[in-house]
Length: 138
Image (cartoon, rainbow, N blue to C red):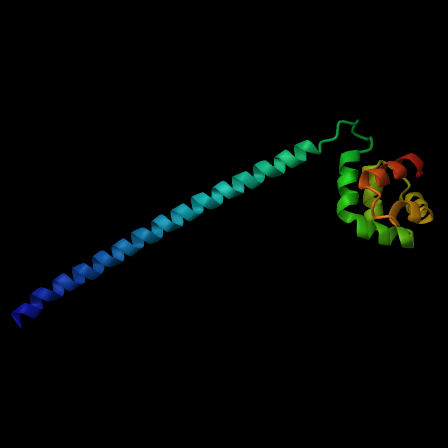
């Protein structure tokens, strides 16, 4: 009976030590994970700012933003083609703003009338589409 009393504190101390070690590992793991996430977030922010800076317009404030319009046409080409086929839509309105075309409806009508030249050939680049629209559309 005397032996079991002496063993109990040793077992309790051993269990408490194990719990403290596990808690320390968890805290270290959590801190390392948070530091890694902060680094990734910072890198994403730097990449976003770099992309935004490389697409910055050098035209006057109310002038066409060709780099933005080119990127928009590249990303929204299927939607723009669909909207040009029917003669209007919100993506055409957004493109009109980027190209400083005040009459969005006139742009939509022009794009509908020139649908084949703009969208029938997939090899026509986005920048070519933008320059055709800017040169011809009202």
